[in-house]
Length: 294
Ligand SMILES: Cc1cc2nc3c(=O)[nH]c(=O)nc-3n(C[C@H](O)[C@H](O)[C@H](O)COP(=O)(O)OP(=O)(O)OC[C@H]3O[C@@H](n4cnc5c(N)ncnc54)[C@H](O)[C@@H]3O)c2cc1C
Image 1 (spheres, helix red, strand yellow):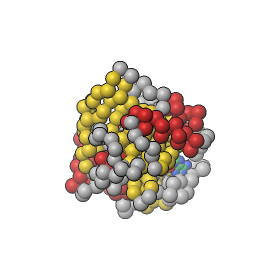
Image 2 (image 1 turned 135 degrees about the horizontal axis):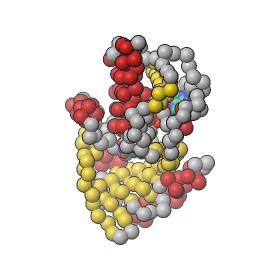
Image 3 (image 1 turned 90 degrees about the vertical axis):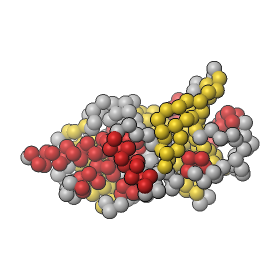
Image 4 (image 1 turned 45 degrees about the vertical axis):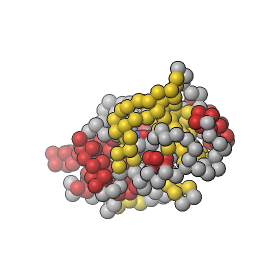
């Protein structure tokens, strides 16, 4: 079996196949595993630039989070976020949000342990295999082979802002409603647990869309929006990362299958890490079932 994409969906799929005794090879175009479960190193420290946190309402995914907690790889972060809205500021309490002291990508690395993963290899045509799993957004899968999966995606620009010191009141993370530039701001030092003076802001889709061609040019607007929101001094550095396919509209099937080609990922349910993991696992289970019955 060939799994294309070493995001959490592809890694979950490959692990489930291997556990069922079916050999699987993962091919990833990036230099590292994780996809949008992404942590990038700035000045010797990782910051989470993709998914901001993990939540679980599926017992199996919760079990995985618990096992990562025992291993010291993940920890419950907060169930409370600040809310900034035109009508006033507030807080909101929701599900427990989990983060990773080593950056969220460390969780993907853990899933990838002992898997056969080839990095820095972009798949441009459908490989020969009993089954091919395209574990990625459908617009990316379409570049490999025509797959009839209509999906709608929004982009995000993620800005990592580093400061000389922490000069804001603790807020964990903040949903920014009705803002032309910002959708969320997270305290990366609080999230990771090292208290580093680092904030990560995610833009709205509308702000990102016209700026995808030159994301670095958006650094000034993102920085000034964060500074104004939190009344901060100038940042020491601002880095911008572009996510062209950041957030899909929620779909309802667990995955898509066309002959021996599967498409899976976070577009198959509510767009979040848990969905991607469940979708990849569901594909593997389908492959196992078909093998046993055929
Ligand atoms: C800014 C942002 C904030 C988010 N916040 C949250 C959050 O707070 N909580 C949450 O649960 N989720 C969040 N998400 C969503 C979460 O990151 C995703 O649901 C999840 O990581 C998707 O995993 P995936 O495996 O489906 O896809 P991806 O992570 O996109 O993996 C696809 C992989 O396929 C690879 N690939 C693509 N094409 C090819 C090719 N041709 N050949 C080889 N490899 C290829 C890519 O390089 C990538 O590694 C956020 C996402 C973004 C971008």
